[in-house]
Each structure stands twice: as C-alpha cells, then as structure tokens.
Image 1 (cartoon, one colour):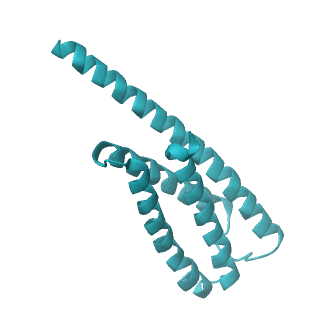
Image 2 (cartoon, one colour):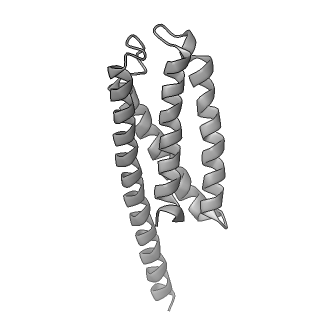
Image 3 (cartoon, one colour):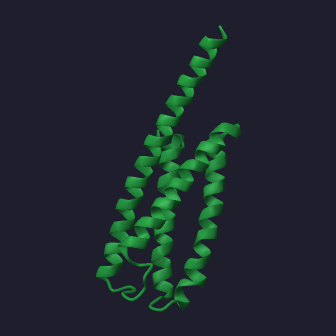
Length: 141
C-alpha cells in the first residue's frame, strides 16, 4: 500500500514538474520573442545606439535568467504555499517593481543611456513579468 502511495505521489510530482518545465519553456519563448521585437524596434528607432544593455545579447541573457528564476520560484511556491498562483503573482509584482528601479535611476546615467532607454527596458520587464504570470499560473491554463 505504501509503495502504491509513493508511486502515485511520484507520478503526480513528475507530472507537476513536467508541466512546470513546459510552462517555463513557453514563458521563455514568448518573453524572448517579445523582448527581441522591442529591442529591434528600439534599435531601429535609434533609442540608445551606444547603450550596451539595449542589444540582443544582454536582453537574451537577462530575459533567460529572469524567466528561469520565475519558474524556479513558482516551483518552490507550489511546494509550500496554499495558493501558489496568488503567492507567485505577489512575488512577481514585488520583483517587477524592484527591477524597474535601475531602469530609471542607473540606465539614464550610463554611457549612451537615457530616460527613454530606461523606459524601453522597463517595458521589457513588464512584458516578461506578465508573460511569466500568465504561463506559470492558472491564468495561462
């Protein structure tokens, strides 16, 4: 009986982990697509041609780090929180607000930076956060 129970729990955990990995992959693919489009538009418009942060490499790397971090956070919350969707949405909102601080305080003072460039980077943060909440929680199912 105990072995059946542990097998059932393992199967549930595997399904949950599999769903989380798929949801994380969807969040990453959508976030990268949106952020690459925003980056393309910013480069084409000449928003900040000399700002290193406004190029594909850092956008790709930091978007990936953010989405992987969000996916791991959701996975941890799913294990400990009574309502992981609500908890994740709250954590995502706080992290989003914190992520916007350097966009409007540091980026404008960087070589090639401006308030507009910081706002464009902030748009990428907002879209990535929204995509992660949509993909990882019940909102996206």
